[in-house]
Structures are given as structure tokens and as C-alpha cells.
Length: 275
Figure 1 (cartoon, rainbow, N blue to C red):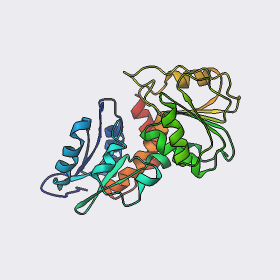
Figure 2: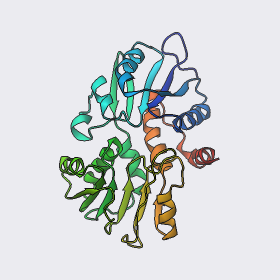
Figure 3: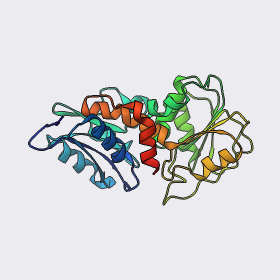
Figure 4: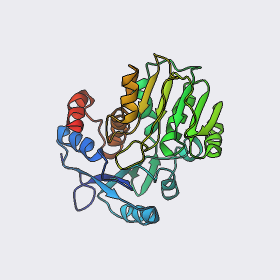
């Protein structure tokens, strides 16, 4: 099926800076092929200073269906789109922009994509550690606040920013420096780019975590990060970055292309992404 908006072939894309590492084109391309859609999905590097021009150009392009947004634009992009779901007041960051007629609308699929792999875990009242205070952390804290977690220890370079973030989601806990010791927790989440290829490493002592803790790293390049390796060395359950990446992408795909992706082929997709 050919999706046509204007005179050319319809397309969506992912934007960020850097962007070379992104696996989103592989994911969306796999689903487009599986469904027989003649549409495209690209990755485009956009500098912070060019974000406004980017959205102005795409708004005028009738073939553009929308974009996913990765670091560092998840908060800044709110200034250039309609915020019909009041995401600014709730999560405070967007990761998806879709076209609705002449309008471009921002939303966030990260929260649902993050939570899906751990939805069977009873986190009510349980202590949690979250590393980071950026756009991804906002979505993660939003999701955690909705399931009634216990105290949250947030580690970030700027503890004052971390404390403000906890307060904005009504979460009780402590905001500490990035190198502070990890306390006991049922769930530990790395919501930063630390440990990603080309970024500084994330070196954590996981000895305080109980044997039934889950370690969740949203980084997916490399898929087996130092954090995931350290957790597996302790025989802890882990969730890798592909889980959240595929989950949030599935929601965005339906917004862009008007049909849910074939999630029954997730195993095949993961094999492709890790080959």
C-alpha cells in the first residue's frame, strides 16, 4: 500500500544530535515492509539551534507524517508543536510529533514504552533508583508515579534539578549526586545516555540491591551495557534498551502510518536489531 500525502512518498523520521546510533529506522522499516506499506522512515541529525527551522520546514512538507525525538530535544521540541494533551504540565517532554491535518502535535510514548516490560511487577510502595533527570527520566518518573512506587532515589549531576523533578511528580525520596552509593531498591533504571557508545561509562556498585531486584537500562547501543553485564554477573533480572525502544516505537508507528505494527514478529525484529 502506498501512503501519499503530497506529490511524493509519505515518510516519518527520527531526529536528534547525535543520531547515527539510532535503530528507529530499522524498526519502522521492518514494520513497513511487513505490512507492505510503500512509505519511508529516515534519521536526521538536527542541532539544537536548528530545531525551530526543522519543524517549520517539515510543517510545510505535505509528505512528512511526523517524527520521533531523541536526545537532546525532548524538552525543547515542546516549544514548536501543539500540546493538546498538556504534556508540558504532566511529563514535561515529548518524544513523538505527528501530523493532524495542518497541525503538528507533540505527545509522549516513552512512558508507556518504558512501563510495558515491567507491567507485571508489583511496584506499589517499593523503593526505586532512577539515574538521570532529562527527557527520558521525566517519562519514566511519570510512569512510576502512576503506579504508586515508594521512595525514589534520583541520581543526577545536579541534585537540585533532581529534587525539583521528584517534587513535580509528587514523588518522595532523595536527589543525590551521580556518584552517590546505590541504596537497596526493587528497581534500578538508567535513564541517561551514560554507557552508550561514544558516551562516558556508567560505573555503579550494585551490591546493595537485593537478589530479586530488576535492573533496567534504556541504552540500546551497545545492547549489553556495562550496567546490564554487572547486573547479570549478580544474577539479577534485567531489561535492556530494546524493550522500551520497540514499545514506544509501536505507539508512534500507529500515529504516523495509521495501523498498528505486527508485534507478533518482535522476536524476528530483535534478531535483526542485534545481528
